[in-house]
Image (cartoon, rainbow, N blue to C red; front, side, top):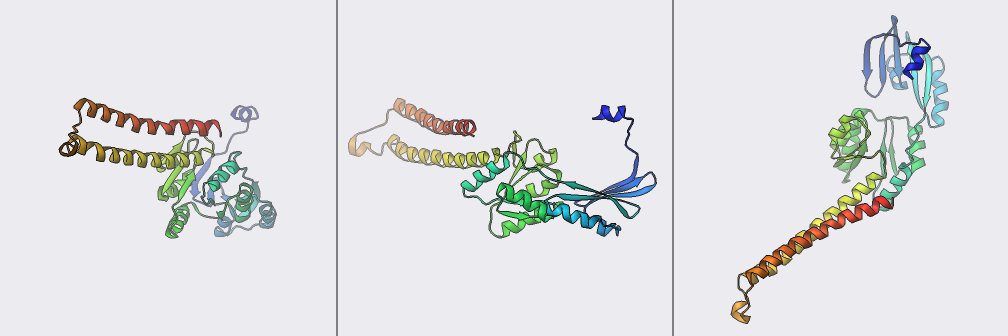
Length: 273
């Protein structure tokens, strides 16, 4: 792309006084003219004359597209209509989460119609649209106040506060470094089907931990009294040190063997994905 730009002798103009406006857009001075690029909320805030482009934007919004306006010297001069395409794995991942008895939701800064167009296409249960980056964490807190245990999946800079606020933050490995730093879990593959797989593995891990703790407690509750000679006065039974050592070794083997089932289960889920 850069080679083509150089070949066509098209070079970006120098922008001065550039300012990024979180959740709204950006503005700066281009060739002495103040230019603004952003959503309708920014245009209204800056008092931009829309020149009928706001009506055109409504038509695009009804088609589920997100609109970005371009303004120069307080006048709207252009309109970009953007459409999000869900990942191929998104619908399958959402279906897998629902099959596990989990509710799914989407928090986005896109307009409501665009958000519902994407959310309905992949089967999302609850959709919250037109949320500023700084307010995503507040939406997570709102869900937690309802008694929900919230897991947040994100990959952008704007998702970082929400990832930190959620009970479990899951970052996509192909996302930004900030998101991965803020998350509890980072998925290596850029595949949303890894989300239900990771949750399923965590449930299985906790199950195995409880099994190992119970078996170790039960085993020691029986073995330690016998080794201490509690049965000797009644039955004359003492535990030979060699047998005791072998029993302890077998206890460790049983715990490790039970834990290794996680590897087999994970391999099976990956191959059958």
